[in-house]
Length: 286
Image (cartoon, rainbow, N blue to C red; front, side, top):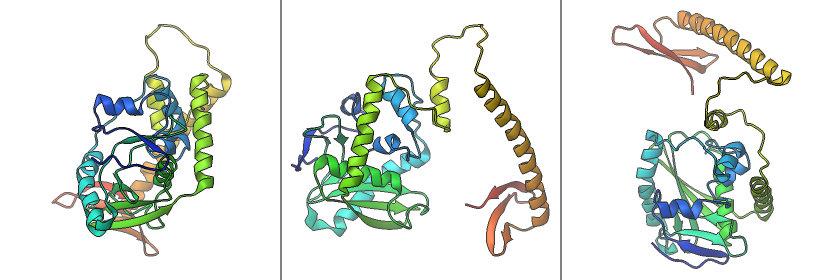
């Protein structure tokens, strides 16, 4: 790994991902480049509610190594090697974890660093990449640049295992300032125990499930607004599921022996089948 000087970044160390040292460099009252999207409420994997619990030392759902994550990790070195092959003059190499020289709580761990900054990604689909870098990755690149004092960052991505692309993201001082302010407010909320609102995500629900440390056989009176919302949503969900089942039956019946259900040239669903032709499932179009 390369210990490369940056205008405002101070190298904390070169840590292997997943080791106790790596976790320690990212723990506590700091915000990393991978966490800033959660602070801003635009992360597909986390949200302010879940991150607040993590930073407060409370229980959060454990990290799950999915096949998508595993193969993304396996492929990232190859994607990085492709970028270096395309840009041999940039002196790029893996590096370590940095903090900002004036803001110790602002952390960044670039994938590649040299004459420029490079973030490496993989994606199973092109959705979200056709008009540039997805918003959560844009936040990550801005945080990296703001931490290190750099003006640009390349994003190298491999989509669907064969579609290699490169994007250039320029530093935006206004966006970076907005993120810094949000991060400072978030960390202040952690210090003072001000919990963010509960998000409408499975991650938030799973986080709440983990908080009780015992099981008491007691009745708890809940507010009318919470009780009403739960009962209305429960009944609506049951009715919606029944209606969806009926809609699937009608569509599958109309599809007959076909594979793709199309309306005005647009595929809306497709049928998966066994060797004898019987249906396994009706899947919504992606």
